[in-house]
Image 1 (cartoon, rainbow, N blue to C red):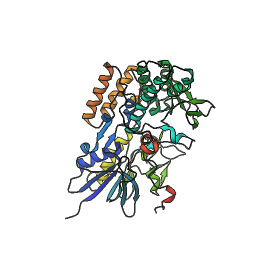
Image 2: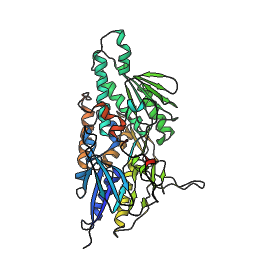
Image 3: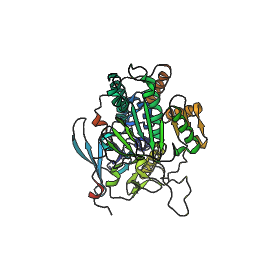
Image 4: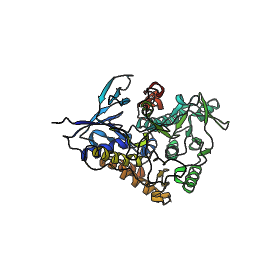
Length: 458
């Protein structure tokens, strides 16, 4: 009797979950042992994290249990910190809250799918690492929500004395970096919620809640095109949000955020949504990279018995024409592509067992949606530009369709319904420590060996 081969998936995001679903469907239990390694026991439906920061959706309702979704997989909760291609092993770091190191585990594989996803893009700007808050994880989103409430609480508690006006202004000013999809949604939804609850306080005024959205790009939501971007920009400015394009953060000094246009902004809240980059694990493998993403072929193969997909892989975008003077474009790092690449890579791995036929990944982008809070949204399904309430319906319909679990869909739909008919919530219940919600800690970006310390393979 031939021993079962072990298929290991690194990453419990969209790609890992959908690859696992397809493998469970195609591979008999007698053929392969299925293992998934993930930093958490759940997939975070990240497109709805802006709803979490705006107190619209309960945090756990965007968490999809991997144990429930992948019952035939063995789940190992931990961070994959290295891969030994020659020995066909991965090293997993396991830690618990409040402990630096709980232990490590070396796991062998016969076939490996690398899908560790992405992390928030950061820049070596003085003071940013110590002050900026990301919105890539549930921990970060919940912390931002509660942090904003805490700032209103503190501002309201200050005495009615001109000596405290500067501190009150600092606490009621929010600076957000990144006018792309994530940053714009975070600002639009959270600003609307914060101003709606600010009138519950006795010493502060709603009009004193100041928001500043900045980006080095020349437009808001460039992914959706100039018309929808202009609509979103007008909607933001109509709510009193100060949008500055062509501007970024020069430094953070104490409670002052210095902008590149020379403007000092006193503030105690800096939200960082300036794009994403591939998980640092990919830079440690000694394999070819394309702007940090692992180079793969059209079938998402990296090497013998190794595949990679999702945000951390440079998957050729065969739905787009190849330029005459350049390489084939690669798929953008979106949840839409990650989900579908997961399904296809699962099929391709099954084909390596002789079940089915491996195929190239081809998917034409269905378009993006952006929920701007209230009845305002922008959407571009199948190239059709929508704004306002019709776009809102498309945006929420897409999210309900894309959520991987029916139980999560029901919970999210219920949250939306309750938020529509009840006053917005303004309670801080999260127990996350500020240091645990920093980008480096929440996203564990510092646990990987540096690329220069890894020997090249091949």
